[in-house]
Length: 83
Image (cartoon, rainbow, N blue to C red; front, side, top):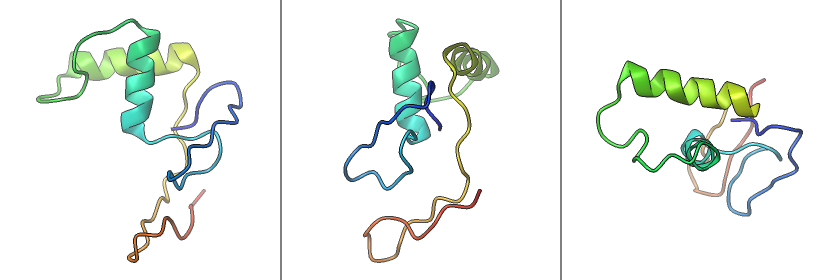
């Protein structure tokens, strides 16, 4: 997921472009922004939860990032991103 406001966040060990996080971390950030205390997508998903998460992502400026994350077989990060 692409973070809002052209974020310069880069997390060591997360082989993603600057300003991007995995969807699971994006969900956690959004839950914090929305002061949500449930478990999010843990367990069964419902259409209601998905719609609420999409609305929160839109509200806070999160966007889909590149779809080409490829884990290297040697465990040393990624090979490339597809735009």
